[in-house]
Length: 512
Ligand code: ADP
Image (cartoon, rainbow, N blue to C red; front, side):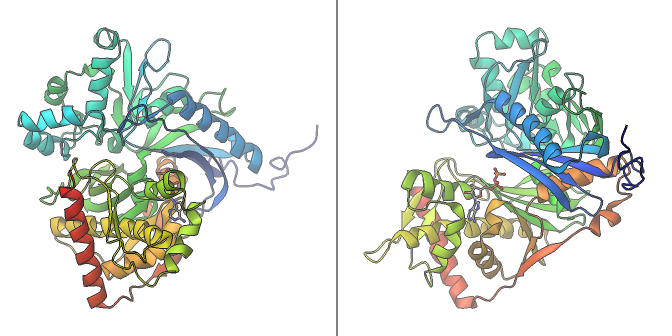
């Protein structure tokens, strides 16, 4: 039998950690990814596959949980084949996932009883409104840090129990399991042996008490959800269970799980209170680390669990923007005025300014800091000189304006002034948007070298749990900046732009 590289001692670190690499899965909304990370935090291989969303009715968003699972497993295999790095070299696996998206499945058959209800889905807006009308806002806010909204998992889960035939009876008989996408993946990847989530994902359900760190019986009762459906909750950086041999021959352990935004905050090494990041993906997600304090927002932001690692739980303030990169998809798929997202930066830069044209993408209401579910999308300020470039530029600018509003609200709540903003996500590769963001905020915008900061965060969490990296200091050595965008815009122009934007937001809010 031929000697292998390991026998020849040429890959000497393979067994020193029980594996020389970490695999991280990033189960996003529009795509799933698998990456392999080395000890320097470098991504040495990656694979991805896009996912479908369905829109059965206006405002409804669904995905097929089996497609998510099958795609995830396929690319876990693909990335191993592509790289030649197989499961005997993988020390641990980390998972980051789209949050809030809700799956309910049968405990025995493992089959979902309904499609996954997506985080963007608004079908439960009436139920969320009922919680507000019945006076539960303060209670929910004080326990979960969240403002009652259809966005979080709780009302989606209640909807499935109330609308899928037989679901409630099965749930009460202990036959159904609820999970966000992390739980769905962990359950299936471990061959149905582990039913668990982490603190960050739990904190996005609107059923989890972020102070006591437990599922909250009072909220479960209000929403009529049986507790037996809910997974165990554990630290984001801890051993969840081994991946079954069928999926990865050497069955590495899943040792890191976090919601994508929290994983990204960790991946940016925003370990200190006051540090913040913005992810420009389908939506925009801005998180600021607030340390061990739950900061109550008076500006419509939510408090959430930032990460649970190394025996401590840290909190974060979060602002979510529902439509960011999705606006670019809308330009491509619905208006047909661009052919691919990557051309928007040059098109926007072909104009010196926005010519007074603003696009407020309130396609499903407005999120933080406005939380106005009735706001409607508008394009305003059009003149005879307006053209395709004006609209593309206004769409790009809308990501930066919305982020500006959230960030200023966050600073007011936390009582800090940000020094810089770390960025990632697909649309953070748009140089026009990043420069415009720095100009609006008046602080540097720092783009990490890796666009996969979310996956990196999951890798760091898994690696820290198994001793692949010793501590956060060691992880920080890996931080690599691609580009800093320094603010250059004159104050007067910034003020004019912002005034125009806020007037447009007022119109979107009164458009109904
Ligand atoms: P998610 O994780 O939410 O699936 P990604 O981080 O992969 O999203 O980013 C994809 C989104 O970013 C899409 O909505 C796409 O339209 C947008 N996007 C990608 N590249 C660019 C670009 N160069 N300029 C503007 N938007 C972009």
